[in-house]
Image 1 (tube, rainbow, N blue to C red):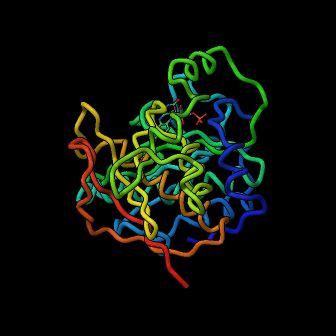
Image 2: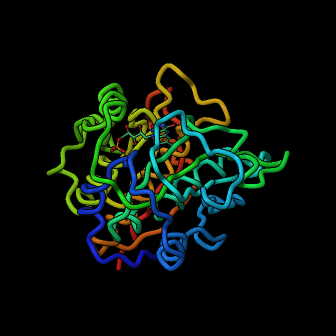
Length: 281
Ligand SMILES: Cc1cc2nc3c(=O)[nH]c(=O)nc-3n(C[C@H](O)[C@H](O)[C@H](O)COP(=O)(O)O)c2cc1C
């Protein structure tokens, strides 16, 4: 992953929040191109084909509804995957589109992941989705109005959006499964703190990471609802992996993603997603 950021990833992870009210202005072409730079086949790590359509409200005949969730956004990015590879596609959308979110935040813009609250028919048409494809996410992108409407306060309060689980409930020692404190995490404390601040659908934070001296192993905690494909929580995992890598780059670490299950002893409900192996120099 190559992210050209002016601010530290950890600062951006802290600053980013879902923006649901925008100034009624289209994103300028140059700024949109900068934000969309990571959305290419080359940046995918999950081997899926993903496609991103920029949808401009003023150039679209039908009304792009979001059930009132988003106000005045004029630009949306629609993330589309092939129905043949939904698991890898969902993971990859999370990993790639969160890079766009970080770049947008870096440039003072706002975004909000939408996995459910958008008018499917209108966005299908606007993004030219065909029968072989699935529209996974719609992401409004634009200039925040600075105002928060009552509906947003309610949505944020219901999801507990301002809160995150404690470090020790998300991260564990690979050797024995015991909780990992921020202090014990050493050089990985910064990338893991970026994971902890990541956005997730209904703020469920389904990411669990097991850490050894040489690697960070990412799992999806399915809880009582075992993931069925497609499951929006795969997007959450892709986002978390993006935050981890951005934080690792900031911390001066080098590593690479591998996808072979290490068969660690973990709870039954955990599904292995991928591991970041630290390159030792
Ligand atoms: C994959 C995904 C899907 C989401 N879908 C919706 C959605 O349909 N509607 C909505 O209002 N917010 C949606 N959100 C936003 C989350 O509710 C929000 O990220 C979470 O509550 C944390 O709040 P924050 O982003 O302000 O930190 C989604 C987030 C993610 C990552």
